[in-house]
Amino acid sequence: MSTWCTMGRTGFPLTETAVQHHDLLSLLESAGPLTSRSLEDDLGYSLATVNRHLLTLREDGLVEKTESAYALTQLGTAVVEAIETTARELSVLEVLADSQFLSNVTEAPQPFDVSWLADATVIQPTAEDPYGLYDRYIDAFEGATRLRALRNEGVTPPGVVDAMRPKLLDTAFDAEGIWSREMAVQFMNAHPVVNEIRRKNPELGVYISTEPLPIDFSLFDTCLVILSYDPQTGHPAVYIETENENARQWAATVFSHYRDRSKPITEVFDDLEY
Image (tube, rainbow, N blue to C red):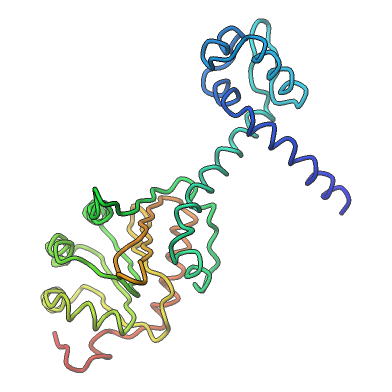
């Protein structure tokens, strides 16, 4: 217990040092070993400042001097990697902070580790490009041969449905979707062509969950796409795309959970027939 606490306390000063000197450490990681003169030129610091920083980093075991230059130690390399991974995670969390994702994902039947999104592509709509995330989704859809989707909320523009129509009609495309009852009614009313697609392609699996769906995602064979919607407008507020294997396995497990608790759409809505 005391050993763990001691390690926890010493980690903070080391982290602070690494963050303060990240520019120098990052340069050594990508281009080292480098002389102090090279660091002076590349960083734009005075030689005295560079040498002072190098002394601090050597004292903390992050940098070592070779015959004529400076390089990261094994510890330094590991620390830089950890700091940059954490920074990526924080940048994703910063974007997600204003969305419903972080609260919704806690209601999923399997725990989700946000660190899986460290290398994710995160897109938000802007005034200049309000439909960019839809374009990105279509690109992911077109590049896939398999889809497992949960739909619980949100507005989908007609152009997106039209773009997906040819592939959804292809019986070779392995696709299943689980909807909340409310979302299915809303979507079918807004896009009657979807029911036409369902009738023309009986291989398309459309199911209604008997349990609430807390999250909306599309699991392709190439990546996982998670959408978080603006509760006021119903339009996507955040688009998250990741190839992380843990995140994809999480989505597969969550989908299986709801698939076992779903019914074919024709068993739920008597007026829908093939």
